[in-house]
Every structure is written in C-alpha cells, then in structure tokens.
Length: 509
Image (cartoon, rainbow, N blue to C red; front, side, top):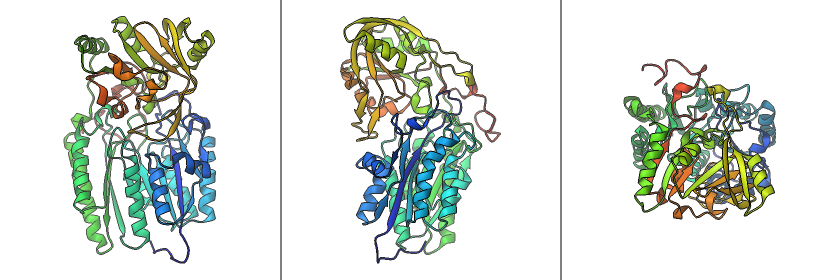
C-alpha cells in the first residue's frame, strides 16, 4: 500500500449499503426500504443525511475532512432487517458505487452490515468487495461491519481493514468506523502495514445471548479491548453472527489486525494468537449462547407481580420473537393478547405495524372510538405460522406523520420514518400503531405521539436487545416474553438447509 502523493488532495470514497437479511422472514425488501422507508440516498444527499450522526459513515466523513480529502459519497442505503432483496434492487445500489470507483479514488471506506443476502447470492458483502476489487485492484479498502456479521473468507481476503461494533445495543458505531478509518489512513501514509487474521467457529448462537453483559461475548470483547489498549493489536473484533440467515458463513468469527511493517511473520502470528484466544472463550462457553425461554403466560404473570409492587420505574415486557430489528413482521399479537388477557393496567405498547389499522384510526379521527382487527396480517410459512389478528376497541388518542430524529444513544442525529402513525387507547393500554417497520430503541417512539414512557407502569416493546439503549435506564424490571415470530430465539423452529454441519447447538460439538 504505497503512500499517496502529497501534490494534490486524496480522493476518498465513502459508501453505505446495509441490510441484515432474515432468510426466514416474509417481509419484503423493496428499494424504498433502503432509507428506512424513504429510499436510498445518492451523491451529496448521502453525505448530508449522515453527517454528524453516530455511524461509521459519519466517522469516515470526519476523517476525510480532517485529511483535506476530496470526498465522494455515491450511495448510503440502509434498511431494517427483512427478507433477501432482489438482484434488481442490489444492482440499483451497486451501480453508482461502481461508477464512482471506476472514475478513480485513492481509498474506499465502506459502512456495511455483514449479513446481507441477495435472492441469488448468500454473501452480498463478498460480492460488493469482489466487484470493487475488479475495478480497482490496488485501491485500499476499509470496512466496518455490524456486530451480527456472518463473515466469509472471501470478504476478509478482499479487504485491507475490517472492524466491527463491540457493543449491543450498538452505541459504538461511530467509534468502530473511526478505528477502521484511522488504520487505513495510517497504512496509506506508510506508518503501518496492516496484517489481518480471521478465525471462524461452527456455532449458531441465539441473538438473545449476544449482549456483552449476558454471556461469553463480554469476556471475549474485554480481551479484545485489552489487546487493543496495550498495543498488542491495532484492532480485535468479535462477530457473533446472525442466526436467522441460513448461509454457509453463519457462525461466530474473530478478526484481528496487527502492524506488520517491521516483521510481517511475527505480526501474523500475534494476530492468529489473539484471534485464537477470543475463539477459545466462545468454544469453551458455547452452552451460554443457547437461549432458554420461559412460557409466555408465566412471563406475563411475573411482570404483573413486579408492576403490582409499585416499582420505581416501568416494568419492560420484551416481545423478542417478533422484532423487526431482526426481520420480524412486527404484527404478531401473541404477547399483546396475553397482556390484555391478564389485565395488566397502564401499559404502553410499541410498535405494532399495521398500516390498515392506522388508516382506520385516521378515518375515525382523534377522540373517537374504533374497533380494530389489529395486527396478524402476515403469514410466516417458513416456520408454519399463520397471521392471527386481535380484535381490540378503544379511542383514537393521537395521529402523527411518524417523522422522527433519534436522540440517542443509538443512531443519534439520524432521521427515520414510522410512516403514518396512530395511538389506540383501550383504557388499560396505549398501543402505538405504525405503517412502517421500526425497532423501539429510542424513547421517542412514544414521546413523538404524546406518551411519556417514564410515567407508565408497564411498557411492551417489540425488540430484543436494542431497547436497552433507550429504555433500560428507565426500567425497574425487565421480563423477556417468548411469543411467536421469525425472530424466535429457539433455533429448533427453523429449517436450515445451508449451514455448515455439524454446527452447535443443532449438532454436538
């Protein structure tokens, strides 16, 4: 990686193509999904949409501006998780990226997910890198990946620098991008020579056991941080994988980068040692990556007892089997039905995605009563579930356009779209109903429509772990509710056909 000439400013290309694909999800992924409901950003619009946000893309922008580089941002496209996108959609995102690389640049900084599947390709990130390398084989490339990456060997071979998030909820996205960007810039300037090692384990881990405070990931990440802090490595990344993508690359991985400028062989050995230490922890503690749920009625009863005790803060009920942040339909009503059946009182629920119900409430108008056949509009044939609407009646409490700007600590500063949104007040529960998918990791999901979550006795969230970013600080108790849906943490409900076997816990290991 030769140093750049100093006679003119370097040209840095920064791009984002991000999708976490749940291959069991029935939720479609049209082009409009990239942009969280409003379509992808291209050119200068991409730069302006992400500037100042808590994302790798923004970190890359800050580095490029500091370096006095000419900045090219051909595309920024991120969708909430759903089914595989079409080849046509993928090519629409790739065309401007390939054109920009062909026009010439000195470095490429990519903000990717790592678990994106196209209808005819299980490794979209590998294809992105392969195609860029075909155009510009010697241009250095840095990539920042999501925590839930299923990493292929081809991807590692084609990148110069790979980093990933170390937090879940992902509140260090900017820092991860900055780390990748700084390593690449140092390499371009000849200060270092990155040596990268990748190790992979055949473990398909339940995402409900991924948070650093919940299982082996915490010990692995602590070790990675220590190795970075003491200078043993430039970067050490754990990628626990995404269990809901049925691919040959699904599993747990580690990527470690060392400086091989003085002694490449020794640097490779050090990287391999650290990666091995990280993977040894995962292998030894693999049983902790298996999720063991309790029955739904029992969980709701436990939550009710907590609430009856007049807690200092709301009791959270987490509907994790139907989380759009992992590809859920967000309209499964099993947990809501159990909450209403057990007559929990003073409950805020968010969000149920049902554009038809929203339109009924808009037609009825604020302050008027309405009876809805809520949710249950989507069948899930991959796991044998049929949509089951829930009949509910109440008063239309609020109607909004669903336009929000996250306040953090996750995705701080980014604009997002719920679509037309309405609140149904049943007397016991206030239910936020949206037109588009959205995970509730920010208190704004309630506050934008007039509900103050800190004042509620119970809050039900269609989330898995990301809710902890905004809601854990206000919670008195947290109860995980095992309902139904295509983000079920019980991996036995899925019919995997592409995983490398044997793989734990589906097979002995």
